[in-house]
Image (cartoon, rainbow, N blue to C red; front, side, top):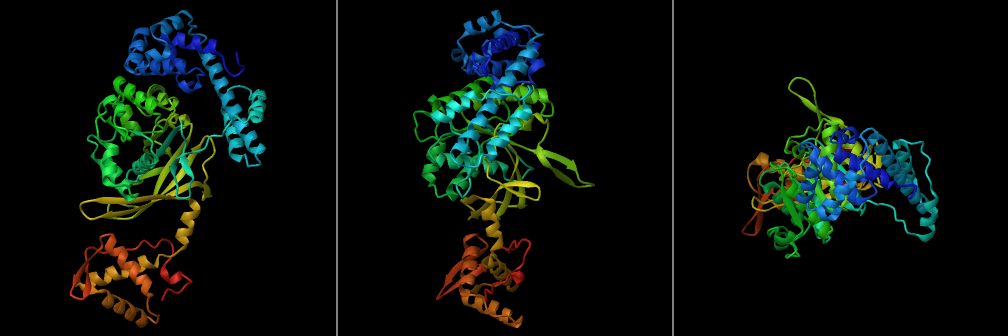
Amino acid sequence: MSKLHNIPAEHRLIGACLKHPETIELIIDKIGPGDFSDAKLAAIFSSIARTASKWDVTPAAVVEDLRLAQELAFIGGDKAITWLLSNAGTVDEAKDNAKLIRELARKRDQANAARRAADIIDEGGDPAGEIAELQEAQQSADDDGWTDLSSIVGAIITGTHKRLEPTLLKRTDGECLIYPARLNLIAAPPESMKSWIAKLTCVQQMIAGYPTVYIDCEENDGVTCTERIFSIATGMGISQDTIRNWLEGPLDELGLRDKNKRLFYYKGDTTGLDGKTRGTIMRIVRKLKVPFVVLDGFAAAMSSHTPPLEEDKARDVNLFLSGSVWPIVNAGAGVLVVDHVTKNSGGIGQSTFTNRGPRGSGAKLAAVSGVALRAQVTQAGSAWQAGRVEIHVDKDRPGRIKIKNTSGKRLAGVLVSNPSNDGIVEMTKLEILSPEQADQEASEKRWDLIAAEKISNLLSDLNKPMSKTEIKETLNEDRKKAGGSGWRAETIVKALDFLVSNGWVRSEKEGRHEMLYNLKTYNAELGPTHASDHMENPF
């Protein structure tokens, strides 16, 4: 038996949970399926947690749950449950066994972190992230912190270890913000584009050729999800026929007959993650080796459970995670949970959202094994208006996300949305800039947008169409009256192209002239500085 594993203790604990129903309530806040070194025992523990969230735990109920989840054969059938019952520990020793199993799991975490740090040092790199992870693992351990590191030397010599890197949700500089095969979370107030971020990750994965699973507990018909996936993919240059192929077709044979199918969508707003559904999800993830799964609506998923679970109770959160979410992670998928943040009173008739992690029990944030992200709107966007959302890191367990510390916040990126809507087809170009790219963009004044606002106001005030020449001459006259020189021609051209392509102005050919008609008034978002503060002269 390895010094980092104790299989007999795992057997006795699982057996105790099967034999004595009260056992699971004693340990659910102390241990999770990921703490078991044996994947089969982890699957049984998840089944016990699911059973406990519905009714009393009995061997027959667990067998039936495993059957519905199509995992009974994987764990060894009924005989495995019978064997565990015959080797069950007592209720009195359950807490000690749970503590021992968790301590060994934390030691494995420490050993892995130390191995990654040593590997990076051996390569001449900076192991700061791995050292931070090692320190966190040591602080979360229930033992004295001493760990046998002898196996690490062997891994360094043989070169068998590779450090975990984020590979999901790619920024424009190529760096990523979400970890594979880990539990990740994004929390934010309503209208902060958190589900857009989840769908952007899905589209990126589909473009790369990978299937994805989207569990939508917030919607009742799939329309919004389809519209947004289509809008994002179109904005990334994917043809409509390709998008249709990715999304169409029944689930027969898990979609394996159609090699083009890449999005498996489940509408879980009323039925939740029942046994049959969960089993299908697990089959898809395992059979197709799905790298990314979204659970959109943590609170909705818990409330649609039968019986309903409460997100502010650690016991319910742990049962739900152990029974329905961790099995997907343990099957190899990176899971992104979409959640809300707490809403506090901000005075009469007002409300504000706290600057913190997800709403409800702290067990949510504690369970994150990858990254916990938080979205914060800096410019509200829509299908008609460009927007910007800052993405901050609240927790980074592996410590590999490249961030910028600013004003006490860990900024991981800035989501920029640029919509194009002709009333029929909506297209949204989504990009996640690195903090450095966002700083660079902010430092560059958008003279074309400043000119666009002036042109839009001019057309609105005159309430009549104007030619491009008339617009340029009028703007330049106004500048000269103010004591300045005229606008650069290329600035005016960019401004006009922006207004027309984004639906603010309509262009019509009338004889030899191209006339421009105002559709709606455009207001440029200048940020903290104005055109007059810029040192360069665009005129």
